[in-house]
Length: 136
Image (tube, rainbow, N blue to C red):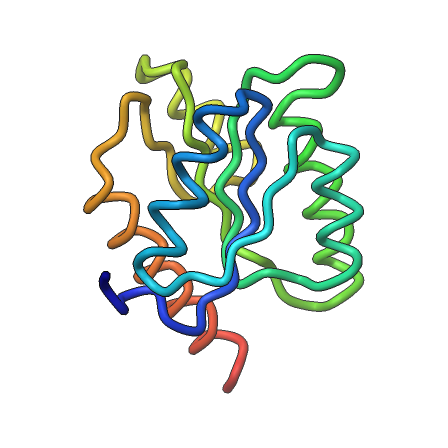
């Protein structure tokens, strides 16, 4: 059991139950404070209850996709005056997909299948960077 994510709150948005559960167990076992959502609607509700330090979201979801999610999150972030960094964890893995993800408002594009250590490192790096940039 690691502690790299200790004290970092993470919102996971993933429609696939197995992947969502895997992410939750992985990140909680490393000390993360994890909230999960199976849809954009659930994610926005969770975000409105408590802004996380980092969002990890799938792109390809039914009804509304990850691009809709990040657009709505960024609108809420503007009201707060700071952004919550977001990682797109997606099967869409081409360079065009990467560019689209980044221009949509995500800070990082991470193709599936992902390497757990790389995901944990990315979450820590983003949480640290964005906490410092908003604290002065």
